Image 1 (spheres, rainbow, N blue to C red):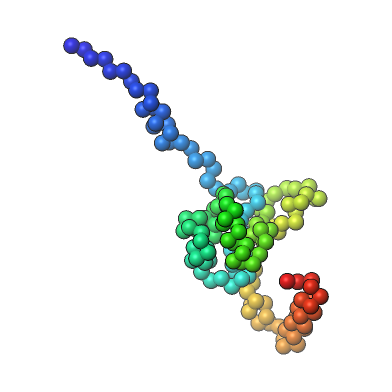
Image 2 (cartoon, rainbow, N blue to C red; image 1 turned 120 degrees about the vertical axis):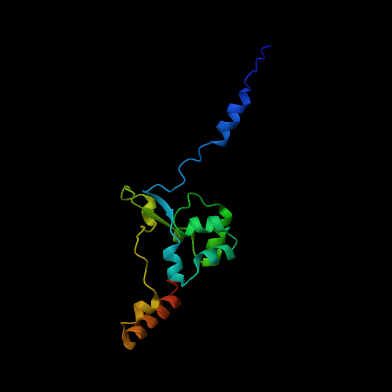
Length: 149
């Protein structure tokens, strides 16, 4: 006796769904990117991933954000970063290798650089006391004039 088994068309479809492509999981080399390393260095945050987790960003997202692998950020995360770091969204993003027309609005966002900014102690270590006082006086004047926050 010969039994014919009809193939189930849903088996192939289910297998295809499991192998669904996730798309490009890395930010394009020339793009607007989330650049937290330089901001954390400027703010003196020594354990950035722990900081991100503390402000409510999950571990996986925190790792991707810090290492420049994040391909998306939601408004809750953006708000948490801006509120806790006392910054604007423009401070979080940088442009990497983009050719833009000279008057394009994206040119107002800073350009990404691999070199991290120096810490304030590094900046001040070679300055004389007079130079440090001059910097502090200019800061105080600018703050009173409202030109800096």
